[in-house]
Length: 158
Length: 222
Image 1 (spheres, helix red, strand yellow):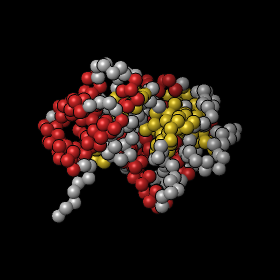
Image 2 (cartoon, chains in turn purple, cyan; image 1 turned 135 degrees about the vertical axis):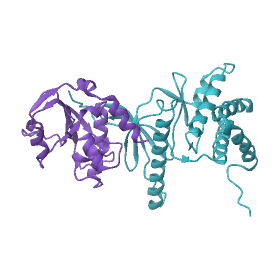
Image 3 (spheres, chains in turn cyan, red; image 1 turned 180 degrees about the vertical axis):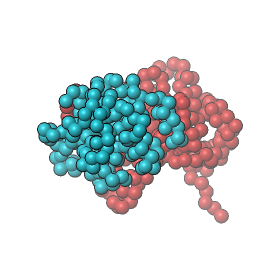
Image 4 (cartoon, helix red, strand yellow; image 1 turned 90 degrees about the vertical axis):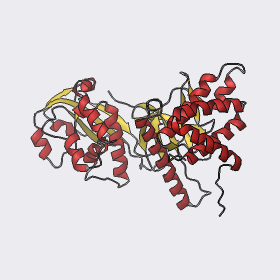
């Protein structure tokens, strides 16, 4: 697939990862055609993030790393690893608000798709294949950022 | 595009409380502070102290970063917080204050530095934070002549003049023992501190006089 970013995650520092390695894979989509289908798919191993609220990919990486750490330590605050990423991105401690603003909603057009891979097992059926849409380079993210909304969500936190 | 850098952390410093590692985190240069297990301490106590200190450190950093215009951009960004580790973004090349002073010429004008130290401590207190351990090794000076406070592990939230005065007193003792700066230099720092704190400044300095007489701990008589 084009424009797929992959980084190594470090959920732990002591050697308690059982030799496992974790990676975050992410891709930016300008348009997703089968959004309804994806949002209804309960087995989807993807996290779709509303790109207009993200200023930098590092935000997503840090949130994903924290989510993975919580998941391994059995300390998830939400139901799944993918929803935990959205929860971590949100300045609010309300899970519902977090999922609605940072996840799929009626206003979101551009999305960052994130998958967390174990041991880098690049099986042929990567979850990204299920997305029908237009993938673009990550550098375009700044074009999609809505600074009014980003400032707004940051200030609510104070 | 992907990041294949091996996850290697190299040890930079080791103190009584923690080890400082340099390495890479999510593709960025990063510093990791590991508050290692102290086997000489009862492990329940050890876990509690570690938790408390990590919590205090992160809380103070976040508070100052969001409240202070001067220190906000200078303090490191937190990337990850674990049970024993805090990972922050790499800082620019820095020197601890006492090393920096040693590297200066004896008759070089240090007024700007004294002023900045006073202002920085004032800013911390102004955010409602008590650092708890302001020493000459916990103030860093970078190449652009910024003073960056670190190690908020013993910090707490308070706006009492008493707590602020004790904070200053700890720093005064540290200056006396680790540098050649005399009491004139410290009064210069206090001067700028007091100006930064506006109305509350005079009150803190008055308290400092009392603290000097009795020491860091408060008398518990009566």
